[in-house]
Image (tube, rainbow, N blue to C red; front, side):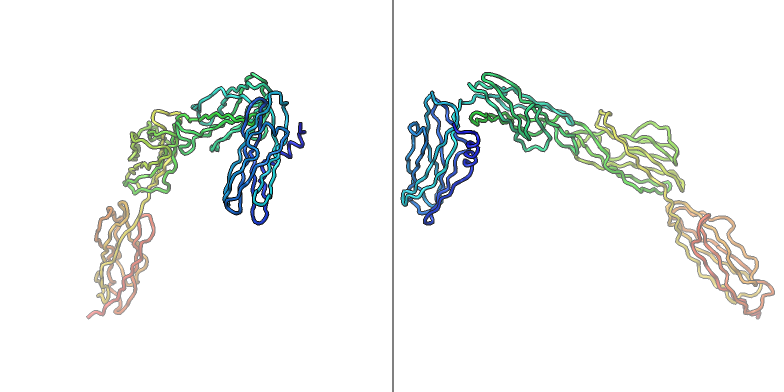
Amino acid sequence: MVNRKAAFWLTMLLVVPFVASENSASMTLTPDEQYVAYPGQTVQHHLDVTFAGTSGTTLKLDLQSQYLSEITGNGQELVFDDGETKRFLWTLTLPSSTPYGYDTINATIIDTSDQSTQSVDVELKITAPSNINFGNTQSSTFVVDPSIRTNVATNITSNATLTDEITFAIQTDSSWNWGWTMDNVDGTNARLQLGPNTMDFVRIWIDVPDVIDGAPLANQGPTFRLIGTSGLDGAKIAWDFSLDVSPFRNATIDSVQTDVVVDPAGNTRVDVSVRNTGNIPDTVSITLGNVVINGDAVAEENADRITSNGWTVALFNAFEDVLLLPNESRIIEVGVQAPGETSGTISVDIIIQPTNFPFRSVRESATVNISWDRSFSHRLEPVDCTYLQPGTFCSASMNLQNIGNFVDSVVIDGVTSPDFVTGITFRENPLVVGRYAEVEFQAIEFRIRDNATAYQQGTFEFDLRLNEGGVLQRYSIDVIVGPNV
């Protein structure tokens, strides 16, 4: 029997192609992965040969072994064309009394045209045939919950006449984490030793991931293949199982429009993006609640329309009866009607959940501020206050239009006036102008003093100002005293 160290080097030789070259012809020999024989049984072995040279060349197989008399097919010849690969086949029938162990077969390929050769030594393992079987003979499907570690097990039996050390591996395209729940684990493989006519279990754990962005979808999942390889003769068995993820319902609010403003007594809408983050088509229930006006909470029940303190908020385009596919989103709108006030803030929570499933409700707040735009279009009507006789009056009118977003008012403030002017009058009360309204009014009036000297001149200035606000514009009128003729 060949010792284990020699067996290791022979095994290395099995996987290395051998190339011979003479006179520009070459032969590449590729052995099988493993050569096994069973006492009292007939087995077939092969050697692949790739030839590069003159087409029509005959190659001959020459085998050498202590069991040469038990081999059929030695000495066979095959004709090769240039670049062709062919397989030499032979059978081996060992006597029933052959002891278990290892032997070496020398395989030589002879080019009959020039007697050039290429050889390879292969290891022959003589053993009892394996007989392993999984308890599950057909593929299986298991329904699993998201975010849970799932344990899968199957029994395996060995009915061989010798103890068998079986190596297990998993094949899968899945990125899910998995591992072995077994005593003998080596990296991604596990091993189990079974005596003749015994049974044991292969146990695997698999981490089912969370459902994120609608995946993994319900009733879908990866397939795993459990492969068992006999240590006796390398025979393989396999069992396929699939994991289908159970339905998972969930909904999220991805975004709420910010920096939203509304005109006094106006209305606006806030865009809200909602999404079905479950793994099945589903509907979502949406409502409003937790209203806060100017920092004070309002005691109102949750509803799709809430009115309080002059404010009204309501849902639009909710489409609660329309299915959303997994990871599909929709834009809903929160309508806001503001009171006729020039300042104020309202906040309201948007509350969503899978329909009739309040355990997974989420909420986000939307805020709207009243924005008062105080704008006017204004002009001073043409006026001539030059060469006025002492004791005479002069007045100026203005055209004014409110182009802001709410009713507003203005006032007139005097700035400077010449010494020879008296009896100055302005509009005493603020002038109220409705939104988009246009008015014309007398802004100022004054009189030239009776004792004013001819040809005196100066400038009369006044401001048009927002009531309790800033100056819109400063106007000036030239004034000249005329001679008394």
